[in-house]
Image (tube, rainbow, N blue to C red):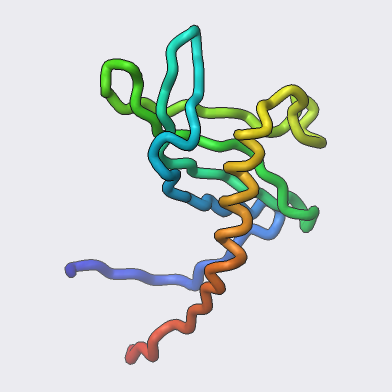
Length: 119
């Protein structure tokens, strides 16, 4: 790999975002848009913590297959218009997918230590 990196990366503490992706078992979630059914097979949930507030789910992007067999991405905004709480009226199945993503992120128990690098 021909790459040079310089500097010391820092995270901006005012808005930290994490995306968590989960594979969905085939046939367990059907999304309907404009009377067309889409079979969801993956959910990518964006969680954010703004200025040290508790983590909140902002959006979920579902990868799904349409009636024609082609893949599409369906995005659902999870926060209300004021961005101060969950959006009302979303189906429980969407919140279940979000909860599965949140649980899997915590259950995986990822730990990481960078390798020793010589300068």
